[in-house]
Image (cartoon, rainbow over all chains, first blue to last red; front, side):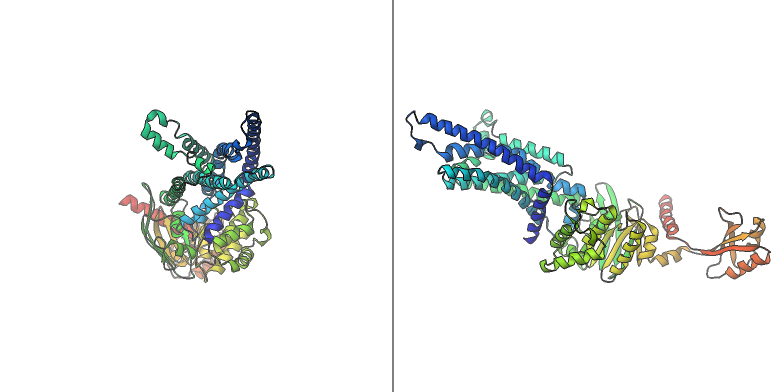
Length: 256
Length: 316
């Protein structure tokens, strides 16, 4: 465990000693603020329209009509920013030769991969923490429910974990960061739109593709529901991604 | 301490190392000598557990590198060809990180880092980012990294590459000091380095071991006869040469390159002909300018061993 933490700490430190962490966090904060104002503005105007129409304030729900669409929109931002976090993790170590240090140290491949995953997850968690500031503001003026907010963040952590595990795997395949970044973005996007073609193929294909879609599973979390179906999906996705990474690192030795 | 048995490593169709067998005893410095591309780095990478062998067995400090990699790695320090530094960490941070992943107990880490930095002369750069160091310092931080967990076995891939002459001498002295407590394998293609630092030499060429012996034995093995360099202050070089050839015990006299009246005089092995040569020159009425034994260098050994092999290959 201490080995995993040592690697995770090193990863996190390298994000913050290069511009990456600041760029990712900075742009995330900017974009989140932008989306927040947009959604808030829409929500307020809807409220004002509904008032005179006789529908009471009760029918407007901050959680369902503001926070949920906001977070769903933000997943697009993660789609763009997460490849920037993962693309360097292995590619950089291979290019600079430091992978030789890690692979000749008394560490197992699993510890190295877990440490890198934890490091990237920490930066992602820092991004999510930035977004919490905006919701704290909501509490100053309204009474959003906190429980759906908690499940939303659990969902987002799992959602990001899937992307990060895939990103780690792709980064472990190459020594070129740009290649890793571009391929990771392509795969993320594919996982994003995978259910868009389902309807044309047939009902069974539609069910399968819908099940594979990343965002499909997120919606229940954002509604405030923790369904084991989605937990199983996300956790098995993360495990599979990390498993592929471990195998890829191991095969690096054989391929020379 | 290190046992390598029938080690073979293939990259697809390319055989990088073939059937390499050697042992290194505790406290010994073994030199790994060969031209670039001979398989030195590959062999070292297998020894450190960086990559597995295609065939064969490697044990470090009694632990099989393939069966118990973590145990073997705990006892091995490795300096790769390019020092594995993280450019944005300071030297101290970097060494602390390495100490952590190499399993140095938390309480001892700080003291170990300071001790190793002092030992490798990098203490004055402790706060500098690794990426901003000169080549010489990078190399020494790499050496510090290999020493940090006080391993039984040190594997150094060209430890003096990129250093200036003063640093080379210091590094060699350090390596010699480390032997005894540590068992060391170092690779190099610089021949004098081997004769100066190593107890034993493995000469490797095209992935095969050509010779394993002490530097002295290798020199002796090749030297069937003694050779003297003689320079005479004489206008008639041919006559002087003949005079030298008449000295009893001399086998052959050849004119040396460069100077007019300079000769390489081969004599029977074990017979000291220096006095007779000097007398022959002086009694001929000339002055003796230079008389010194010519040593067979490791260069000659290396060239002859590697070309012998080529001849054998051509014959078979």
